[in-house]
Length: 87
Image (cartoon, rainbow, N blue to C red; front, side, top):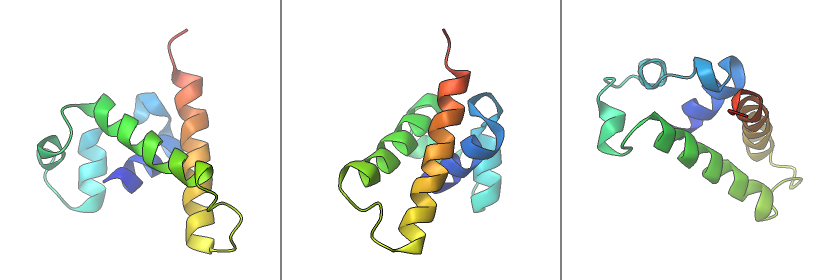
C-alpha cells in the first residue's frame, strides 16, 4: 500500500491521491488500509517516511535498480507533496 501511495502521489500529486484508488490498484477493499492507517494523511506520512529513509541510510547509488527506482518514485512524490503543500 505504501509503494502504491508513493506512485500515486508521484503521478497525480498530493491532491489527486486517494486511498480508494490506491486500494483498487493493490486489489484490496477501500476499507482495508484503515486497519493500518487512521486516515489518508497518516498513509501519506508513512510513505514519505519509508522512502526518505532509503535516502538517509545510504542505499541510493548502490546499483540496485529496484532501490533506485523506488527512490526516484519517492523523490517525485516528495516534489508533488511539496507542490501541493498549503502555504
